[in-house]
Image 1 (cartoon, rainbow, N blue to C red):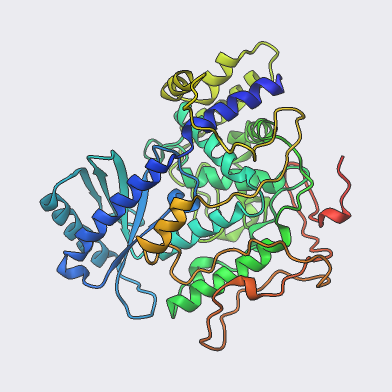
Image 2: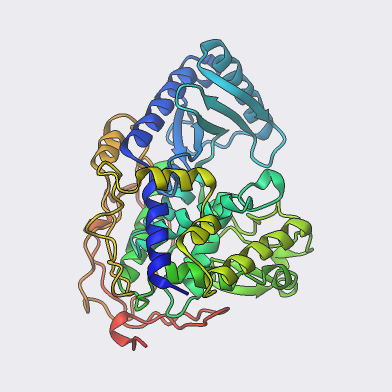
Length: 467
């Protein structure tokens, strides 16, 4: 495998799929227009519209869809509307959107596990999935965003994997393949089970089942989750001994799941524990009715890959296997690699931007140089226009009372053998406005065991030997 060539190709792909400022601005405009529609509906008096999904996680491409939740007014408490009421309210939004104009392809899917209204903005060509009271979706999205604090390669890897999956037509749950969320979980799982491990099991970030804890006063619940995650993420941030380049991680990702069709008959993927688990020994997953099981770590035991059937799983496994085979072959060139990793329209954009002084640079100054093939840790800084929009245009976009992750690394040695922070609800109504006030130290030995391909025991960097 020509590592230099693959590095250049992956950088080219990321350069054109990474959202530009205009892409962010367009989505904020769409959100504002939908907010105005919601505010005009009598049955939704007091409701707010809040984004989630890849847009909040900063894992979307320039052409990514927009997930939105209409949060019903319930005072300070978490709203829990029934399915029939959600269906009725989505019909109200559908009617109001038609009346307002500027929208097309309005499709109500009332009998899905989570009822949604699909709608597309005509001017910006942005597709939206609207749901009601989807607070769990918002919190999942925020935790995925926070995982970038541990290692910025996660963001790049998810964008690269999603583009590759689209190129092989295996990123469409309607057609029995992966949805984007399950692909993100596969990347998380790969980072947990590669050697050395990059991510810890997600139970070390948030020890509970998020969906079970969404009860009571919303501000307190969100604050508890934020502080727990912030404190635990600080224990692992920027301390990985894994120096693999993005292209090396991508090739090992393909190798790990190249036999997924045979492995999935006996083993399930569990990012919560960071392990392959035997399905027959896991009562939560029985009876086995799915071709593959990728458990949602925040809504256990839901299967995020439940749409995949046996026939499509065979095709998915073949896509992993053949792409890995071609990328590791000596008979490859830049054109063949591009054809394997990206769709034709992405290839055209790469060719159009090559040699252009106006071509958008991807993480200039922060991305690891092509030589040598060693990963350099980088911190993802929020774009200034994102911060401005968060603060002004969407009052609850920053998850309402979710504090930001502490950007300062903890002081080594201030605490010894610090266990993961448990998700206990505060006994008082005092809300911690930011995890920055917490005195977080570096643990000496969390000693969590990783199973699966490349088993690895998690240790602080100071105790590891880099091979």
